[in-house]
Length: 564
Ligand code: ATP
Ligand code: MG
Figure 1: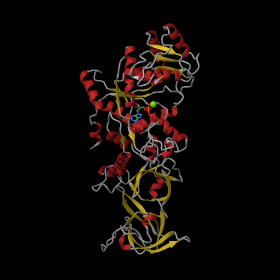
Figure 2 (figure 1 turned 90 degrees about the vertical axis):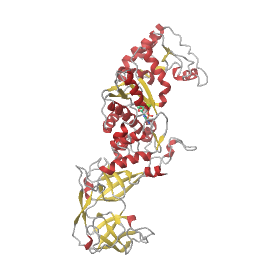
Figure 3 (figure 1 turned 180 degrees about the vertical axis):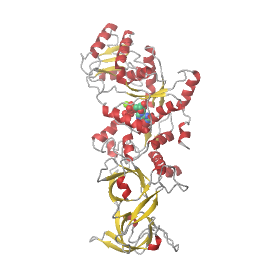
Figure 4 (figure 1 turned 90 degrees about the horizontal axis):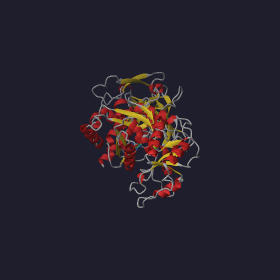
């Protein structure tokens, strides 16, 4: 299946839009929005909503707004706004309008006054706890607040004084007057405004009452002329309230549509919990390559195309489910396989001296960058590079066994192996330190085997990657494993906390030797290290230090899962 086939795959949301287009409900318009709360960095779950909302707008020739739902000033920051903007652009999407719910604070207040005048809203003096008690439960109806029947005049006066800052935080709220016995608890006189004397990152100290989500969201959608307001399933019970406000105010009404959140195993997708990981120092920051944030995945080496592809593969559903994180890794590998050039990097170097090779000689061998394209590489890509070879090289420590196990075809005493594209070498001597650890190998090479082939056709089973010791660059290679050790990290272990699910081995650091071209690589560049996996250059790279992040290993674990 190609990406194009996937993006046009039908889903229940498209069916609804097609029906609206057929009936003319929105005059054929499609206008979606992505409404993040700027209280953390964008994560893979948000990426799903981004791909869905922007994707639908693209496919239907419509529009998509980016609107920050900034109604919670104590948790929101400009840094988070900036990160969402950067990440959405990086994923390849452009918004039609950029808005903030705070742009509408004035209009929301006027509409609140209108509802008070219509006797559809009132100021309540109950405490938060009392409000909770009065609300009732799923099985018991709620009861009316003693302040519910205040006069319009008194409510107008109190609301204005709330707005003017005359009352302390939490002392009063404005509530919609709907029905305290509704089977839908959301409709039991929901709170519209709370008092909060807090600096807002955009409106400063202009306001000391802030609208709640339900009061801000639908009206914001309506102001922007949104046609399809797509949100996750947990808002299903809020839809009647969304519509109630718009109906009472006689405003243009979008269609709210709910879909299932994206959940991944071994992964946390909650900004609140991701913030805790950052604050506790469990990760190096929001962009730690182990984080499921878009900035973390970018730093790790994931591509926008791979993320978009993955989101397409997960489909759009009405039923909650958990996706195997192996599918995401599959999409990354699938994309990098065709775009990341091969390189040689030795992660655990063991020195090999080729005793019969001239001391001052360097030969340059040609190595394929994209051996998978047998009929020539796509335009714009370089087919081969030249790699220096000399008397002293490094090979991977585990490519040698002093006493080779069965089926180990790599280097061993007396055995001949192929150095990729260079020569056949035979191990003649093993050098050890006082403790018995192997520190160096002595070998001889066969000068007649340049390119790695024996003229007499003798069969060589093992092929090793290598780097020339004199020419190689030292590099720090950060090897990542899953951040959490268990499938459902949200589930706290017995007697513990969810954070105890962290995988203690999620980062190991290797002091590698890499071929010289890699020393010039710029942050963000991606490569396949032969036999190891895909790696991206980390921004910690400086003039005298190259740092690589393991993006994903070579092994297709997803294929294995599918085969089961
Ligand atoms: P979080 O717990 O991470 O803060 P949220 O839903 O409260 O999640 P918002 O910033 O309010 O985060 O979300 C912005 C948009 O992204 C919303 O429309 C929300 O439904 C959507 N979204 C958030 N998480 C997911 C997810 N896991 N899968 C799909 N959509 C998501
Ligand atoms: Mg939220």
